[in-house]
Amino acid sequence: MTERNEMKVVLTFVNSPKKSTRHVSVELSIPRTHFWRLMHKLKLKPYRPRLAHCLLEDDTFHRLQFCEQMSDLIGWESDLLDKII
Image (cartoon, rainbow, N blue to C red; front, side, top):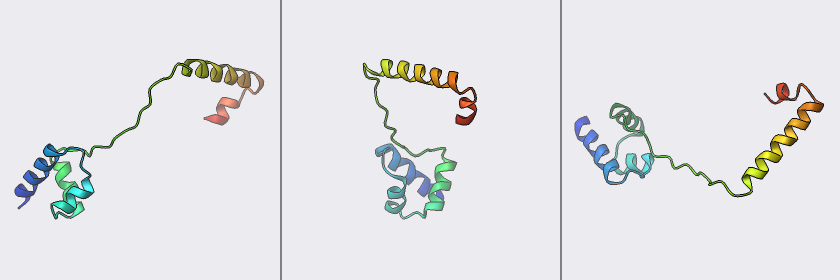
């Protein structure tokens, strides 16, 4: 039975790699704990989309401005970095 489930899980993620693990578990009628054990055994990891933004033209200016402001603040308050960290 577990070999059959392993094949089902692998085929499901090969056919649709972005599918939710929760949906696959329900779709295949496999309890989530068992499903996660299978994922671990097969060395599969869930797909989690990460949003990343591109750098804009103003970003360089804003970063430089932030660094200058922090430099001024550190000059006035020497233990500022210790407070931040």
